[in-house]
Length: 84
Length: 123
Image 1 (cartoon, rainbow over the protein chains, first blue to last red):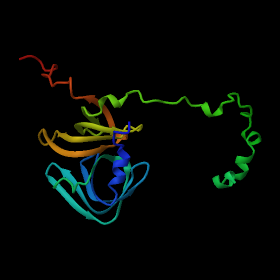
Image 2 (image 1 turned 180 degrees about the vertical axis):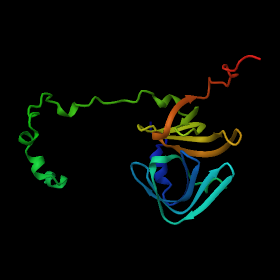
Image 3 (image 1 turned 90 degrees about the vertical axis):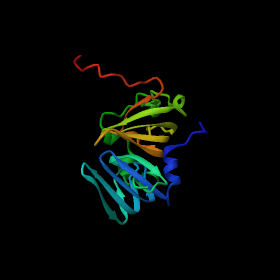
């Protein structure tokens, strides 16, 4: 049991580093993780939002954001996003 | 002190009178109201094996299970996401945390194979 990695622990270790968040829909965010809560709502900084459409990917830059955990599907710690 | 902490001193202090009707606690072990719920799938047997995970919303990934918790959040390594549009292709994601609330299906890759579509009318 001790040899496995706990998911929320891995996210916790990522606080202060870059994280890539993939939503259930065709939307992704990459930013610096400032923190998260029990529901994995997340606070990110220096965020780039990627919206994938059939015609291409639209990016938007955001400052500090609160990301609602309801739609979060996957988290990639230490990654700069889809264009890395 | 504890009642004040919860912000409802009058309610907390007198259990019987305000509850009207449910005065007699039948089960002396009131703390055992809810049976302890265990996971129906023991994920420890899949650790270090490749599994396929599907999500609500249509995403599909495969990866090596490295860790999990009671809420079905997973840690997968060497993850490949299978994307179906514009054409079927894969992208590598590396070490990923998968959110339990969005997971709909888990199955081991070993032992599964892709077959011809059995529902197509034969030519």
